[in-house]
Image 1 (cartoon, rainbow, N blue to C red):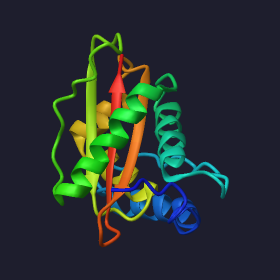
Image 2: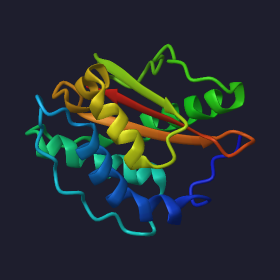
Image 3: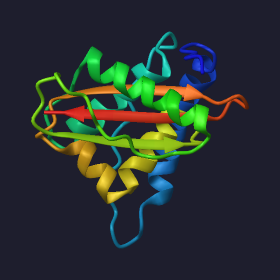
Image 4: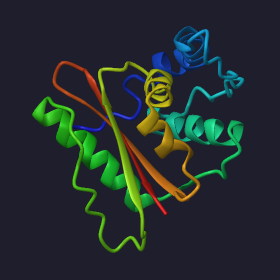
Length: 162
């Protein structure tokens, strides 16, 4: 599976702002209205992985959590796992074996089929377990990966360490 950082970038970036704003607003229940953060501007040259990083830190900032730092080892792990899922055609969690990274805690969010970073971010923020991973102050570093199967379907992975 080839990692294609710019194959879908322009269409992804064009939809990030609108899709995130609309999907977050649409998924809020009347009983549990959460404030919707203003969507950050994402430069057109950013990759899908870069957009995920920006969106994660935007959510963390909005909810009072410290920003994540990007970690090359976690990024490689997340990208490799996204490629593994794309090759197998199934979404599943990895064993989180990033030994040697020096982290005492770790977590992983995975997704498939969402067409843009904003759709993935919205799905994760609407899931209590994934949301906890995104906002957990124990995690200080993260890596992000996206890979596409032979049909062009995306597989997403975010790996957190702290």
